[in-house]
Length: 313
Image (cartoon, rainbow, N blue to C red):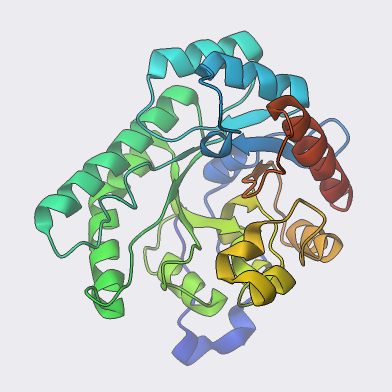
């Protein structure tokens, strides 16, 4: 089943913004919403690209440390050695619920240069095949970048044009292409985000909701209420408006979990009310100094995520 009642805000208005309005394909929804953890809460995943730096750990070593810290799954970037990832997955028993497209910043789908767009499209294809090999349900895609050289109008049309080229492969593999809200000056309201997603009229195009990225200019629960079942995966991230105001924009991310401005009880309640289940993927943007990777992963991320997810139950 594809979307049949997608939003057209000019005629339907906000009355259409109700949970379940997306009419997602049941098969896709089953694949996305992998089993909750044993206590009925969300499962904990970890974005591999944010693994503590400083040591040259192998993929297997990283997986083992994440397993020990209490994580259920790992989110790798695309383009890694598939055999090495699969070996680490098999040895640790960790899931791979999603894969991050590794080329969307360096080779955006919305570049004015056609050759760059082709590289970006190939990178998107690689991510889909990686996800299929790893039995992931979702890939994370930044659809384009608005800047002084590339207009908002062009990013909107080019990104949809390129994604439509690859969408048949996503449908064949049953992998959701999930658009993430990032600071790329694009799709900056939940109403526009739902319109963008719904215009594809496909259950295999959804939204990857980054909680921390919204705090700078909005409230996560408002977005969740409107995006509803379009949300295919979530990133767990903190942000402090006070640090932003005192130290500069990017300093807002220099805060540990539970020490920023996320209203986690309200956010978790909103996710539960729209029927979200499955994984919450940690994307920690800050690591205190003189803290070992083991302590950071366990005490500063995993255990604090347990406190956050407690509000989901």
